[in-house]
Length: 234
Image (cartoon, rainbow, N blue to C red; front, top):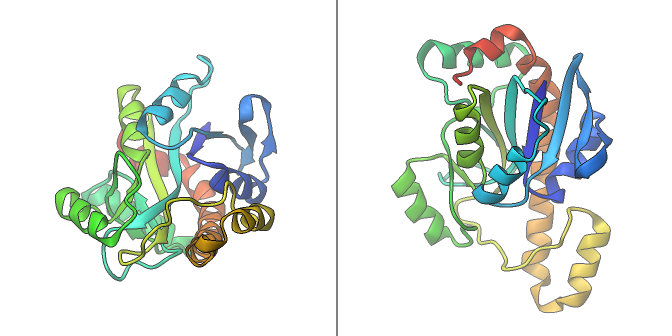
């Protein structure tokens, strides 16, 4: 079984549609990918909410792999909106095995560290400081907590993150509640002064969502292969 953990409805709804997962009780989505049972849970933003959501999983749910999927900010110049960063926690031969196996499926994503911040980094300056401190390629708010939760239980874990804001992009203080046209329209009508920033972020999220969906549609069948699961550190 695989657990997909995403933070917000910006990520969960379109990914569920792309992967053919159906709405289930308690706000999760369920289905199968390549014959392997998959649950998607929406954790909320941040490490504390992520851990609480994972702790709330039924006791008889024993995943082989937990995937922290969703959006991230770039911490390196040259990393563009829509590019997918994969942090498998793997090194050496294990990392090369992952590169080879994903390459066989036409996936050539960036492998690198994803580090979690305690808040949204909205300005280029904040991201540059965090990049220097962490040495990471991309930033989110959930991966570190999910990785620790999985390690405590001997479960393999991987982060699959699509870049929304590039290093020199600033994020608005507020964004629409979902990544769809209706939510964007409601947001714009209520906050006309923030239209330029909101529209830019909306279209970046749409692009990141498309690339993330395309990646996961190929990645999950590869991740379901026992040999690949064995290469992931627990």
